[in-house]
Amino acid sequence: MHYRTFGNLDWKPSALGFGAMRLPVLNNDPQQIDEPQAMEMMRYAIDHGVNYVDTAYPYHRGESEGFVGKVLQDGYRERIKLATKLPSWLIESPADFDRYLDEQLERLQTDHIDFYLLHALRAASWEKLRDLGARAWAEGAIADGRIRHLGFSFHDDLKAFKQIVDEYDGWTFCQIQYNYMDVAYQAGMEGLKYAAGKGLAVVIMEPLRGGRLAKNPPPNKIAGLFATAEVARTPADWALQWLWNQPEVSVVLSGMSTLQHVQENVASAGRSGVGTLSEAELALIDEVREAYTSLSPIPCTDCKYCMPCPNGVNIPRVFEIYNEAMMYEDQWGAQQAYKWLNEENRANLCVECLQCEEQCPQGIEITAWLKKAHELLCTE
Image (cartoon, rainbow, N blue to C red):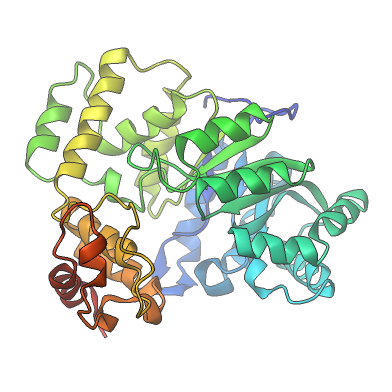
């Protein structure tokens, strides 16, 4: 296993962290974790050098933390640093901070959380937690030993990310979605470097974009590009090595679903290191990104000139989900993403007022594409 730096903290994390969000399940039910198989996977990872385990209150519909607590018995708890997350959206009063943390400690069968995150922060949720006294509460929980270090996971734009980083000097780390396709998405590469420049460790989630970058690419230009490389790698290995090549990356979390995934990713981490990719290989990844992007049928640049829609349709997000279905040949995954989109923001609410088309600098036939998107993505 290769070990890296963790911001300003005097501790070396494994390059690969184990994310307990996509464990194997029974009967396609996310609440029924296949415990024998998942136990073997997680303990294999720890036995082979993984020392960062990440879970959260809602994972596997509330079952992940309890399962992780079982895995970490028999001396495994002492071998790793444990991360979990406060369910930020459930906090309504200052008393809720302690209530959820204490419940999580019980679930995890531990007396402390090494790395505690405020989960899925956006500008609005951070403002709410901040005003409820999250900073003072966290300092108290650190003082009494229930948590060791505070961080946050993030899902908003770069401006909001920088604001959250800057408004509290007690952060030890943050967790962002980042991969070779998402260099300008949410916090992106600029946010990665901004946080690292402030001394924060940066933990990476969705390194394979929900598994899309681990699949064999469609038999088109992308597969041909990878075939030109001097070093043969799997698609997953390309994506992971691209991340580990960057010194600002502290830990790459992988939500692994099979023992084979664990074995392959552990082996990949053992080959990793800052600066291990050549300039030619980095240029190849840039070409792959451009090739994937060229597969997007809707030429939306996310300029948001079409917004706000008078009927509430989140036009750029609908187009993003539709384009990803085409880019990665992943209709099912796109349909799941569409389900997560609020019903009041979906494409079927378009009344063809054409206001958006008048504003679109790309000349996109927005209303026609919204119809196509809803037909493909809606399963209800």
